[in-house]
Length: 167
Image (cartoon, rainbow, N blue to C red; front, side, top):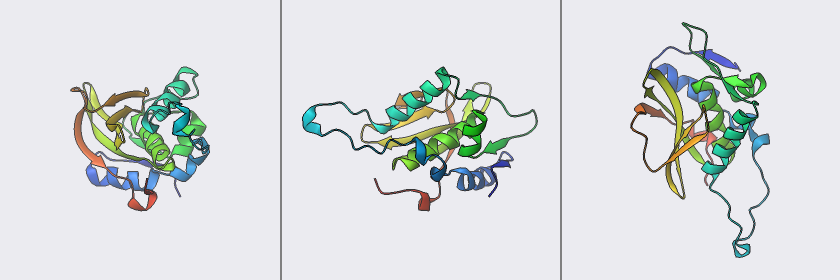
């Protein structure tokens, strides 16, 4: 199984790459399996999207992850394990990592392909008990309820249904 793919800019190639490179089993070790505290304790348990966003921000702040563009002329998409080993990736690599984390945690998420001012971009979109969200995989910035105006969506790509668990 390849750890990376060179991906042309078209829907069929993007869909194929998402199906092959979203790998929740590669990030299982990042999921806290401790049961949440009982509700009667009154301990606030943030929604999973907020916890993933916080983890991602901490990785960037501590320099355990960083953003790095692909070499000019190539669009290389990496598996979550390769991104974690390299400790760097571009928007697609980091999005595949984060979608894999959501799936490993039993949550719903999908790859969003579109653009920001300046060029093509990928990010994570999903929904949880608190509503829809957009998670910027290159920073950990979380947006709730509405996609910011500068994110121009071309299409969503859902991971292979066999990778998703019932929540």
